[in-house]
Length: 416
Image (tube, rainbow, N blue to C red; front, top):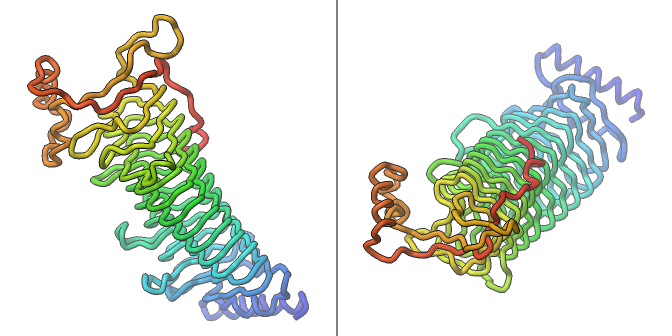
């Protein structure tokens, strides 16, 4: 169809829909558009579902709304070199078993999804078996419902080498990467969800300069290795299972220049690394004003902490059910409760920094006692146990070269 005829057809369809007070179907315009062309529908409201299977640019210029009328997936892209820009996509179905989504990339490659608004859908962006795509500057807003019954804001499954950057995800369940590798997740803001970013059997991915605010968990790596978690800001991951960052059987993970602030647990380690020859490196991170800055499920070797800041945490490091974290390497970190001296002004304390577990950590060994954490009664027990210990306290960690000044870090780049 010639461009003039296509434009006329679009105008007639929009006018007919307005007369009937219904959204015009968008699929006929997509079918009529030439391969490799640009489709700019007149401003208005259109209905899905829509499938694009050829190279095409759909440019809504911020004035096109595509609705799924609460049934199924609204827009599906398959093929290569497809661009979706400036479109508001809304009201998918709510069937979890079908994975209803605002926008799905299925066997898509070298395509771009940018500057769109995705709202009131079960899943926002669903990426399946799709490689080398760019998902940029989209705003993904979840619907009503409890956290566990929402769909994922972004789901990436069996997809590699994608760039997902500058997006905003609000009030969805998770952003999740499964069986996917070499994806870059950068400069996104994830707010009021369950898992801000969850890596599951997803090796070799990077999460950089993202902001995670008031999620149950900021970043969690489960059975995923070779990750780079750099310059992220994670704030207010609270609640009974609140965690800033979690590692479960995660090997060769680099955590660098992250800010973890006001979380129930800043960093949680469960059997990571599972391979002691593939250590996890933690450097230049700031753990500030958390309930527990670092918590271990059990003592774990091959975790290397250097140049990190521990400031204002209720407890800096603890191990569940007692014990120490002496198998990890602690070297050159800043601890705000260090009481040693630096008379030579080298920036390194003259005596090691040590943490011992006294009787005040009863709340750590007995979860039922956590209600009394910080209470005068436990403070009194701590004072007495330090003054005249009834038993030998447990050494939790020793930093042989503690820094006497807080390090600066690059976490501010992650945004507010």
